[in-house]
Amino acid sequence: MPISINVIVAGESGIGKSSLINLITGHQLANTSNDSSACTLSVKGYRTSIDGHDFVLWDTPGFNEGLGAAPSVNYLDTFRSLIEGLGPRGGVDLVLYCMLASRAKIALMNNYFAVCAHIPKSTPVVVVVTSLERCPGRMEDWWIHNQPELTRLGMTFVDHACITALPDCVTLSPLIRERIADSRKTLRDVIRRACLPYCISPSLVSFPTSSLFLEPTRLDPETTHDPASGDGVASTMVDTYPKLQEPSWPLRRRRTTFFRLPSGVSA
Image (cartoon, rainbow, N blue to C red; front, side, top):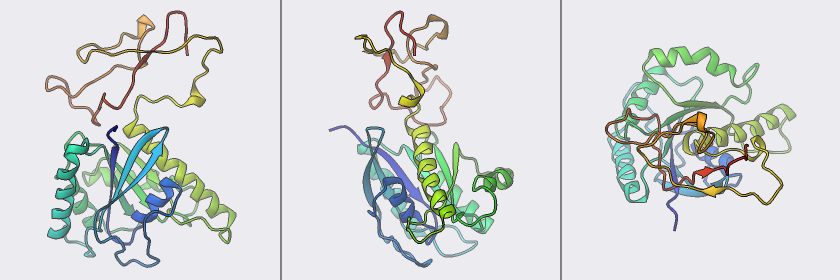
């Protein structure tokens, strides 16, 4: 049985982590609450598929309800146990760090560093800013205005998503319903970029209509692709060997099939 790609959803209570999981999967799998009280009291995993790849989205309890304190000891114990438990299942592939646009900066910073201290350094962390359904202008504008401040506080991310996690409903305004649809696409796209870095969208490639086919090939981890040769993958392959610089995300070749185009065939 193939090992699933593990995505941890972390953040404070009441900011829509469970709603975010439902948005990604397109199904009401995780229980949600209409107020800011904690709804998820234990770690729960939810399976979904993106581009034919098997994912498990791990919903976690909220950090705490304090504005300036670090995450509670109980939360850190739960988080550490999850990380250790995922070791035999392939480890952690991605952390979605959820925050409200108005969350106090001290708590946000403390929680961020606590999470990063318990995951492998090579694990990508993506920030997901929620509750932007009624923000003026574009939801993406929040990141443009606030990203420099997050960086100044020492919080760096491989990617970001500015979204609303509201459940879709016919009674909502057309603008909010459009933002909900855009948010689902944005979330799935950031997961693709972080966890499936070598997957090419079918919409970006035109394959020949003849009987030519793609030939699977194995690339030696010591070898990098020469773009001038016209063969192999489109970018240099970097593996997590001690002699190489640590990449921004863990590359697991057991999950990725590399293809070499036959001679004379171009994408």
